[in-house]
Image: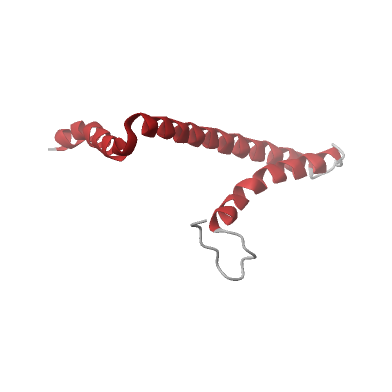
Length: 108
């Protein structure tokens, strides 16, 4: 593998460490659901737990949407690279330049 593993990391590469915060969010949702299941509705913390759960669910939904978008972009890039081969990078750069040209000319 071309991934470097630093000494003292128990053989865990950087990619594994980068995903950890994202993996924690669903765990927080599960934890809050469990806390709510075991908290009386009349308990003073019940309202705050419900609000926290609502916020965590919103964040998780947002993260899932962004992950889905990223997956779709990767799939599109794979298909495009199969169609146009090694010229994909050049085609993408030319497309970006073409898209930004009207903005540049409007500034002049």
